[in-house]
Image (cartoon, rainbow, N blue to C red; front, side, top):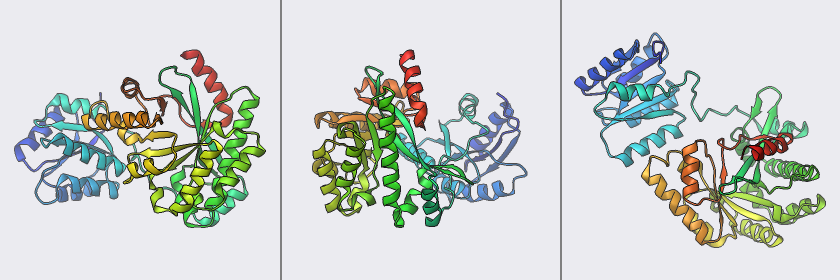
Length: 396
């Protein structure tokens, strides 16, 4: 692999170890390299570098600005896209730093346990992709009036991501995901507009638009012979209204949909909303036959409390516990415990964010019920789902 055009900085306070890393990089053909003894020096050198710095190879335990602080500044100032950690610290601590870096939007190529070797560097640098960009980009700024205009122009649509059963590989359902086909900014993800809608008076209209779109799509599929469960996300701000259960049930009734085919997904953070109305609506929806899913399980602070007082039928395990679980024992323990909890409570367990074959194999071995993620399919327009299902069924 050719590393000639790769820009890299080595940040290491130990002079000998830094020189060793520089020597190995030279052997690998990395020409554009700068070095620094601590985080502050590294930031100055990156800003003054004659070429873009793509990857930072940094120690964690350094005097002055340590590696953890340094990584935060790299992300906040968008100075690099990828990092490689080098450390002899405990595994759990390194895993936390990796998670922090990813949460900041950086690509973590991996961690090298000291001492550094040429082979270790080669293995991790080979993962770098020139097109790599931070995972969390700043959403395009939108204003409430933009959303209002988008609703009036029917720019908000639903994309659908299939889910399959681990054991049978059959289609287990689809999740409807909001998208905004903005005429100037292209296809926008929910992070660009949901918060703005929730802070304004538009979340009710936006949620209803998604419910109407998803329910109508479900009916259209059924007319083509594809009958599959549908999951729709509900804004917690919307669930805090008094008549939500009646509105959703009325919509399903008008379209001839069975509530048993619809699962409504809510997040763990519902404790921060008007809990009285939320609990009332969820209880009434469940009485009507709708499924209720706790989304992003494990990322909130009140999981057990929510499970004890809300009539959930499904538990969705967040991607942050799936990614890396194959080589991080602590994540595997969390996955296994969550699955056992779900099954003991009689809940269907769904793992989201599955992107690799080894993640699929692990979750299947742990007796997870349903898989969702890019490994199965990316979100797609509604008209593409029947053909995808035909192709998927033929490949099983």
